[in-house]
Length: 106
Image (cartoon, rainbow, N blue to C red; front, side, top):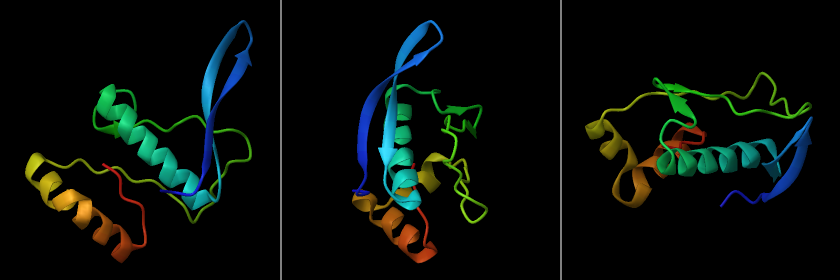
């Protein structure tokens, strides 16, 4: 969907080893893919990225600064507003994103 290259890489950190998701592409493509993955993880494991209504910022590597012209906002929606903003098969979400020139992910 976002035209990125994504894969998991083994990372050694002191005495431990873990896998991290690497996303390559333009800043817009990376952030779109990142938000899509975060949404999928949050649906599977509630509270992993959103705690107390606040979006937890993912860990970034040095040099992955998006600059001052890029940001992420989080807005809580109740069930009725969520259903309306999503629309049938996500159609309203896509229309809102296109009209605003932004990425919308729930």
